[in-house]
Length: 261
Image (cartoon, rainbow, N blue to C red):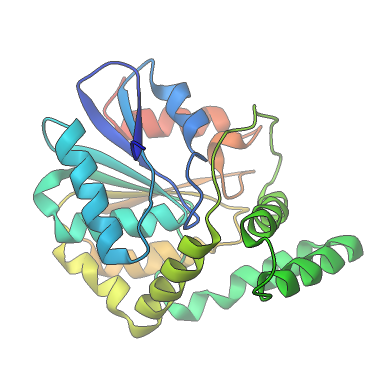
């Protein structure tokens, strides 16, 4: 099975890197939306370690892109794109981080605190049930993880629009393996330190309603990335291209970063 999909016409210089880990296909609607302006590659992550995922992404870029690329990473994909840009700096023309998780451990507890505060009683019960199921070895964990993701998406959104359901997959084994490694990388401080090796411009686009605190992206990266700027979106949660009030501005800002006028 091919581990990427292309949209629009070549040459392909823009890659959309999905989150999760293990949520392949979640950026398809964005890829379709901007493919009338730029050729897009949507890689699918299939490996179980960060090192392997970085190499897998490199192989996709080598196969599909004739020159340096615009790397657009969403959520966990923002971290993966950040790591790739540090390890293969010559391959990346610009790095765009959408809804990134915080780069330092001290900000991480805010995510669950905000989500819990937004839950009604029914959502709290569902959250507890799904969390318990995810810890059981006999559970259909891909299905449960998808349900968990849907609950988190609802909590993370300000005014979500209805979009056609994607045929994306959810991979619990990949999520469990990679996220465990990634969280340790952040806790150790090494995740942020990779920024010392990044040579391209870096832009963070972040919704102000996103439970992932934008301060946890802006403040650490401002101290370590030479060419860093950020764009904050009002009335916008974790997934800007699916937000009723922020969708248009997000599209304009993203195309501007991709140097499409």
